[in-house]
Amino acid sequence: MYSTTRMKLQALCAVVMFLCVSLAGSHAVACSGKTAKGRLYLVSVGTGDADNITVKAMNTIKKSAVIICGEGMRKVFPDLLEGKEIHGTGLRVHQTFMGKRGSRDDATKEVERISGIIRKAVKEGKTVSILENGDPTIYGPQMWFMEVFEDLNPEIIPGISCFNAANAALKKGVTWGAKTRSVILTNGADIGKLAESGNAMVFFTMRISVPEIVEKLRPYYPPETPVAIVANAGFKDKERVVLGTLASIEEKIAGEKLPLYLVYVGDFLAKRYGIDLKGKAPAEGTK
Image 1 (cartoon, rainbow, N blue to C red):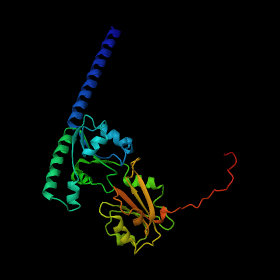
Image 2 (cartoon, rainbow, N blue to C red; image 1 turned 90 degrees about the vertical axis):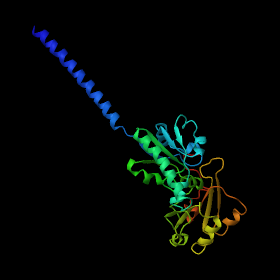
Image 3 (cartoon, one colour; image 1 turned 180 degrees about the horizontal axis):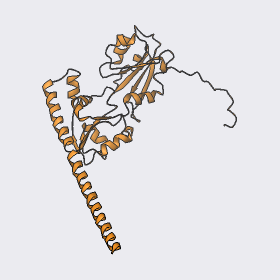
Image 4 (tube, rainbow, N blue to C red; image 1 turned 45 degrees about the vertical axis):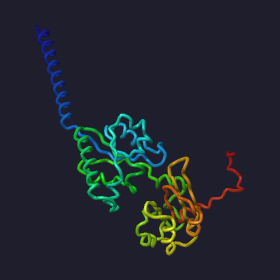
């Protein structure tokens, strides 16, 4: 009898434990449903060719239900964006509120439109990704999203900038010059003040041309200062590097209409290491 009673108690305990676990699980699911929150990301898809996108960026886009991007990205990443809810956006907001161009009323309406889409999706527990070429934090026109949606705690997925791609095309270390160990990134504003330091400079040329750069740098850098232009950085089949000096670079590109390009100025472009193995016998054990 004792054995039978014990078995009944064990069975009863098992049933109670099962019910407790089931209730706890149901409660957890219910709670998770109530507190589920969507996420907002600003994602770099890299610069140039499609294979410059990072794995982290791809994974973030894959788990996103809603995508904010330009028409060009739909063509570059058709498979990755297939089945997503996609909304377009232009550069109007950035141009208006930073560049002081265009209608402020129109830009505000654009912010309100996009805000409605994003906040609704996040409230529903969806992941939203805003796609940006290059690295969003280096002259990125979509950085305004970080301020407008600060309350949603958005996350930036960094990526390859045209600066990174152009550095690779040059095969140079931009902070390792003979005399200069710093580099200034600029869109061409306040060149005189920046040039006084004598540091290497990289121009994102959305606001300034090569002749303008050369003219404004002449009072501060000697004519033999190395200069390089990198066009279509990151595009394997279109990337181009033009090397010269402050005195010769204009002549080297005379008559050309350059596409998107960066201009580099500084002694880091010259040969730095002085290693010369010409005529030397190979080390033992090598061929």
